[in-house]
Structures are given as C-alpha cells and as structure tokens.
Length: 460
Image: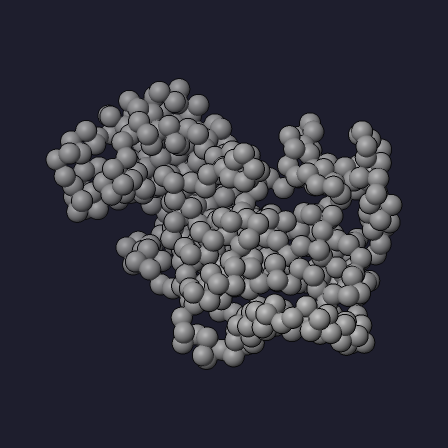
C-alpha cells in the first residue's frame, strides 16, 4: 500500500510494517544521517519516529529503512487547537536541534506528524536535509500557512475556518485568507502581525512593480547582506524567537453549552467510590472484552475514554465540540494516557481526499477499532439530525471490528421529551435492536443509569 511517493523516497506498508525506500541519489546522505548522534537523540526523546536500517532492497532503491508503526493516522483538520500548537512546537524543536548540526527541515507540514496518544511524532525523515546557506529557513512561509496563521485564527475562536482551509493540504491558510478572517482590532493591537504579514506582502508588490534592472540591483545587494549575516547562530536565534511567539499564542477553548455538561448534570460522575449501574457495566464490559483499541464516539470531555485507556486500550475519542476535545486532550496528557482526541462529527466523519481521493484515507479507514463506545448520543442523532436506526447501525458497524457498546435513552427521559415529535413514533428499544441485528450477531441489554436507560452490548 503506497503512502507517499516523490523523487527521494517511497513509503509503503508490507506485511503490516512500514518501510521507506530511499533513491540512490539520497541513499548515502540518509545512511549517514541514521548514524548521527542528533538523529539518535531525536528518536530517544520520542520526537522522531523510530527508524532502523534493513537488509532489504527494491528496484531502483539502494536503501530501505523500517519505521515503527503508529496505530492511528490523524490529520491537522481533526486536531483541536492545543494539538496543532503541540505539533508546531515539535516542528520547531526538531529544527532547532538539527540546526546545531547544520541540518534543517525542508518542510513545515503538519501531515508529517502523527499522534501516539497525546504525543506527536514526526514521521518524515526525508524532510531532514543539509542547511541551505542562502536561506535562514526555507520552510518558514509554509510554517506560517500551516501553523502560525491557523493558531492565530484559533486564538480568535475561528476553529471551523481553520479546519476548512487546512483541507487545502498543499496551500494551507494563505496570507489573504488570514488577513480577511482576522479581526481589525487584532491586527492593530499586535504589531508583529503587521510586520510579519502585511509589510512583507506590501514590499513584495512594490518590488514586483520595479523595472527589471532595479530588481537585479536589489537582489545583488540583498544577496551580499544575506551572505554576511546568515550564520548558524542567526538561524537558531530566528527559530528560538519563532518558538517563543508560538508558545505565547493562547488557544484555550471558549466555553460552550457542552463543555461543562457532565459537571452540571452529573456532578458525581467521576466519584469512583460509588459507581452507578452505567459505570459498573461499562467497566465490566471493558474488562471482559479487553480491547486493544477503542473508539469513543460523542465522548464529551472523555470520562469513558479515560476509563478505557486506564484499562490498557489505545483510545481515539471523537466529539464535534472543540472545547470538550481540548479539555480531554489536556486531561489525557496530564495523566499520560493513550487517548487521541479529535474534533469530528460521527455523522459527517472526515472523508478521503487528495490525489484520486486516496492520498488521505477517510476516518472510517483510519480509525476503525476493536470496540466502539456510543453513549448518550443516539437520541441526539435521531431527534436533532433526523437519522434513523438503520443508518446508525450501519455507521457504528463501519467503525467497529468486534463490538459496540451503545446507550439507548427512552422516550420517557426528559432529554428525549424535550425534542419529541410524532414523526419519531418508531423510536423504541425494540426497533433499535431489530436494526442492530442486521450487523451484530449477539446483542445483550442491561439497565443503565439514570433509571430507564439501557446499555446494549452488540458483538459481531
């Protein structure tokens, strides 16, 4: 299965493992790179994917490397702002370390990073190249388009705009996109924005309007100044300043109606001394089935995501509320748990896109897990998004390899009554079980909490 192809390398999966074949032109450089202390140090710190040389060979490639396989591919279009910021800092930290050895990253590209739980790992070692003495950092503008501009927009509560623009995986957030989306007050109170974006853009337009002979004079003079001052120390200073700027961006999620839902409605949820019926059943199911991977759909702030991770599962947690997902990210990171929280709508998951809609596989292809949790959600999907049980059963089955743990909220429940309509007369436990039976061979029903709610364990 071909993941990436360019003139320097081919990345592919073979027998469940990930390999990178290096072209003859670059084989010696990357062979020597693998032996460098800086390369080993970046791997030891967990910043760079574990990589080792193999004895394999393929046609037209002299060197084949093996990478550790990361279970889940996730994309910047799905990350909450704190995760995007973490990847921006990772990119700069790697670049700063490489600069000490006269190396650099030729890309500042979030698609080069996957998450192991809450820890970002840089996977594209062929982004590492020798420093170009004519450039402070050739990927700086790309860094702006994929990290700096998106983070500034996130800090202004424009996460939906960011995710939409990042779907343009080659362009990211263009200068004009950013300037049109950012408030005027933000520009006026932050002169760095003016200096970094508006001024260079204005100077570029002025330069392009000059006669060709004047442009040549400016280029020659600029080249002489550049060669005089572009030193390793200057590059490190530039990257360090950029890192401080990124660190200072406030990406704290704004409060939403869902960000404190469980604290307000179920304040005793995290009191593990007196678990209710729902907590006991979910805990017992996780113990009995012992899944290696779990997908928590509509996770809110992730109480059950954390429960699954504490029992040893690798967890991906989905919710369309970015504030909830950000809270879960901080919580899982603080506790060192393997939980990867993503901003995603279960009914409208990330599609495949890129070249022939194959370059970036869909969420269903990437995030399928042994077990799926879908708790306190289906009544929202039926009553607010007008989904029927047949569609929901098919979608849950698509994300599940082995089983689904589903919660049913009866029509007598206050949260269902608030949105009830005669058009939903078919909404019943019996109808739900009937449609689930088309996809799952065994369905067990348990009493949940509060009273009247049911938990369904559906096994394939």
